[in-house]
Image 1: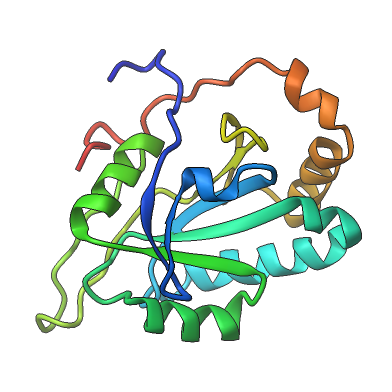
Image 2: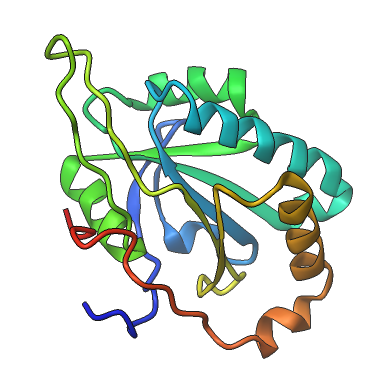
Length: 186
């Protein structure tokens, strides 16, 4: 995949309610997709808290958007673990897990880097990963992304504009981003 190839958003797996889902399961709504894992100590909990506040601030516009949290650690993040984690930290967010192959395919489709880094024990490991939220339009096409570094008010305003002006999405050409890391396909 070269840098000038747009993201081809696709995924399949099991949501945190135990249902089999694909990217087509969410057609008709904007989808905000971000990758993380439940054992993350800082970035993921902070991102979920920020996203929850943004969704609350969007008011009725939030009904046009579904946030999806895709694990990069399916070995530990079962549907039950994801459900418990999200009920506490992101109740408006749907968690997605699946087989290692399904998750690797989703990472590749979104050009996400994630790699397991050994810890003090076999169960205590970290998974550094790309910290970007990808916005898909109601037809499932990639439209833009928001880095983890964006301020909360900027994320809120960006989503408000994009959701409030449906025709803006249709007029906006697909944006292209380079790979998150030279080894994004892992």
